[in-house]
Image 1 (tube, rainbow, N blue to C red):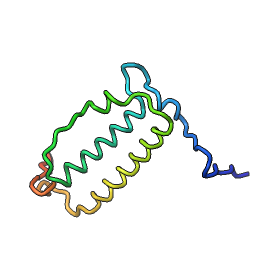
Image 2 (image 1 turned 135 degrees about the horizontal axis):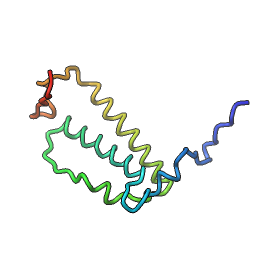
Image 3 (image 1 turned 60 degrees about the vertical axis):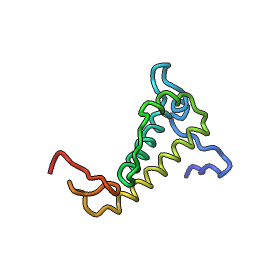
Image 4 (image 1 turned 90 degrees about the vertical axis):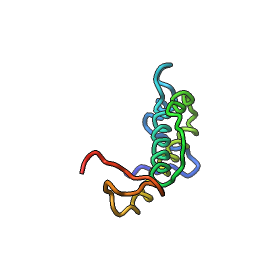
Length: 115
């Protein structure tokens, strides 16, 4: 017998969801902070590769500010990570040549240590 899928009104439960919303300890980041940091990094990668912005990065903000989240915030973080990943993947798929001379943004070049 096939399991009945949840109705659109039911909240879907994911394995480990309870652990994701809580900080593991006062000195460790929660899984939610890890997910938020990956999203931050993907957005930063997108900005670096496709713009000519001059910007500074606060690498520690996510770790300092993301502790315990609600189940609703956890769902939003997961959805944002998925959308950010798909957006960057789509943009990167438009790059036809990946080599040492490929421009990044209008005035940048990528120097790879190999090739």
